[in-house]
Image (cartoon, helix red, strand yellow):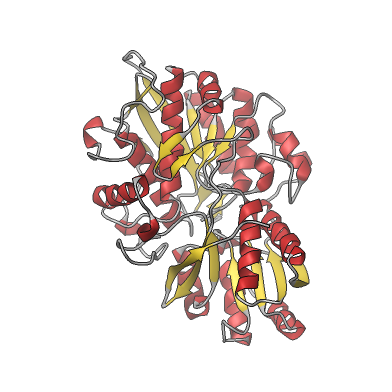
Length: 453
């Protein structure tokens, strides 16, 4: 999710304590190809603002229902600690983020509702508004400050990379660790596109406090360009929504596309609020492009772009449309209708029928617990929560600074995603991306992608 968003000016970043930086973003029954986002919002229990896991709710035989992986034995304390999540629970991303929160809840249930000897209370916050239909700078700032005010131990989020750039510096000053299940923008953990200087501004108030479970866009953009070439594309036109996630990803795609011999006919930012891109699509068709790549989200132009392209060129094989995890949601298909057919998307999540071991157990436990299929990023939500709980176990403390130290020395996590760890930048050691295509109104897995050079 996934997942990206609006890039603030450096001045705005410094004024807030900062400014900003997002994404990122199915399933089906076992043995079938997944259909990300096919469940309605109503089919997956909505997270209440405050939820506490019950130890008795732990599914038996689950991968995380375990003795402490870290080997720590913490004394029982008659105290409660808080873990917050901050995701857009309103708008087009809601189906995805409800599932992510459910994944977090499941990990907490499997862990017995406790960590480090404390009872854990989990609160799911919304960083979106109904008016905006997406996350906003104001809501994300409010959520980060609330976490500080309420004494939260860990902050799970964000979903959008732009939102992460808001909360990272705020939480960095307070020393609260932050673990994202969906951010993919490169410059959250190292200098990189679209603004290499942003990284330096995020951690001025303390040691790095940010970690992510999902692989970054240097891998996603490279994998997408390689796949475009495999699909037979020779002339590509690259669009972006001019936001942190979308622009950075588009830059990676363009650079790698040129490196592997694809002709980039154009590189252009769109106005996400525009009602039509018909003239832009006509220009792209006239230039002879055989693939349009869009770095952005459903809500920043994804659906309208493909609708306008198909109005001019109805055949999805003559001019292919490809986007990142930011469009790999049911809302893309709902919004674009028949125009979505044949579109390609990339995401780090594997389909349920490709999961084995702990991943398969997660899938079965999720369906049993929530009565619905998990969305692509639910499994990343699970392991983000698991990493937080293991770090608290390792620290035997609810002091955020102690937990941050434990996260930096956590070692291997045996999670639903398999065995993985955080590297010295806070990035995951996971490196896999998958390719999906819309077929018969559903996102269907096509293949595991090559993210190499």
